Image (cartoon, rainbow, N blue to C red; front, side):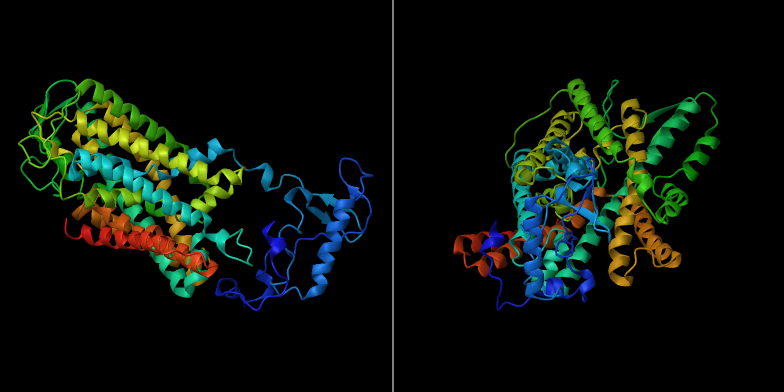
Length: 558
């Protein structure tokens, strides 16, 4: 009941955050919610039910506030506790009867368990494939410490974002998102910069998706071709023997190179011409990224993405299957660990390496949900449990990343291979003939084909809505935007198909603003306006900003 202590008259002018809307048409829905009704019959299950005494008192209080000032003055609009709750909303006719509204928001909200797994499912993206590579780059011990500490920092920054709109006084922020909060504190700069960095995260994810879809489509086609033509494939690169074969695609080359695994085909027909022709038309970097254009570019031009939203459950299935795959492979391969704290050996990496910023960049995107956490938490049935549910969701995400990263790193067979062979996409360390990995790639390919148009829809809605004021200004505008996005994905898949580097750069870039800088500044400004900002808090949140800047700059020196 904080609103009871709020003065009716104040010398403070309304902020920029709501004055930008321009006219009274954009006022809050709460002050304009219909409530006036004479004590006549209410049409409900009981046709003779009459207006209660409590409703009559609320009606009088709304009239009182209504007479204080005009409807365009927000300072004297009725406080939230005066406005009826969702369960007391009625639609009134000119004849004086009132129809009770059923099925309002409170009945469609989710319990905590659904909210927790919605956050878990949203964060479980392509970054999980790069966690073992990131741990290898940082060193096993340092990688685990960085994963835990980064998860805690990201959780705290996400908590700041979640509570940021509630710290704004005298304004109804119930329908605000974090960009609206940034606009309130930083004006147009906050609005457009938050949009820019949000686009970086979304377009970066779409580029990673294109590279991975090209990879998965290539290996899936390779598996089907070899099986259909009874072709036995013997990898010429270093690899282990046995049923659970593990390969090292680039043993003597730069791991960030673009070459694919050279293979020796031994077929029954002896016709090498067909194999060479297939390799020419089915290349991971030269042809397969172009084939995806035929399928995905038309899907991006759909007006609505509701059809693809029905397949989001595939993300959960894919992650569960990946965890199962990792567990089975670890059981079959066993653990291969030796601890060398600072010295590199032939087969093992040191426990502490100077390449650890590559892991922090990947983790910034892996734990990134800050631009949509407010929306996800709005559907939580028990709003008082938001912080607890957010913490539990981050705990589950961190445990999932830790489980996959530690098992893949520990089970990687060294010797005969060396730990530096772990790829940015750990599925590349298994041959295309591996049936379980083939199933995983097929699952992930279909999931990404359905999620990719959703990401494109989010980019279009945010960008077109801000620039043109319409989510679909014209087919030409939408097609031009989609061609640019698809072109970026094709170029990356052809010339730089290293998802580890793409993830760490996009994660560090969007994390700089939406994870570290804006949440820390918003928190400090809010505390300062309340007169409760102390130097330890200012020092800690300034340190968060320094961490964000250092995380981005370090990516250019790795």
